[in-house]
Image 1: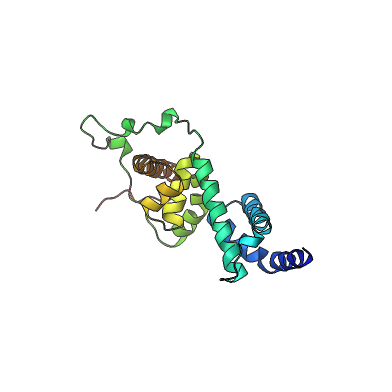
Image 2: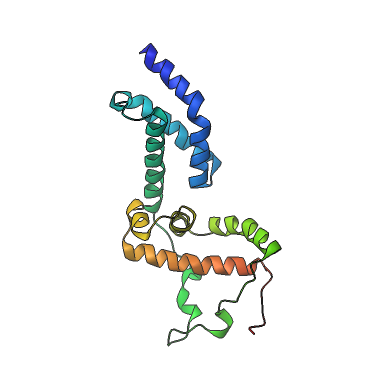
Length: 188
């Protein structure tokens, strides 16, 4: 028992910063990242006998953390999502499925200062999304996962994933447009 405690203490000292940095990159939430790292070390202590030493301890701990993060997203996706009246995308299109003139996406410039503005505006707009939509967007675009991997991780249907992505894109567009980024209005 004393050897186990010594080894775990060394691991905590050696790997906490790396695990935390990775967790915060995957979750964008400092408090959640701390909790997930703590849960990782608790799971390592409980599963001490399962560690076969076929890999480095850091690799094993990152595997545990990866599973903790996936579990967090699965649990969060299982929570009921209440759609708001603003989630009704039918108000954006006419009866033939074409964009209403006032709802058409506008072209945005993406040079210099505007890129900096995007970096500042995107996180709050992502946080404003309902949880499932935000998770789908983050896993797909920020973590670069494929659709099938995302909906399997979140334990949702493919149809639910694609619908969430479609609605999330529209909501992000609205949020970013409301932020009044410089917008190109001449369509030459």
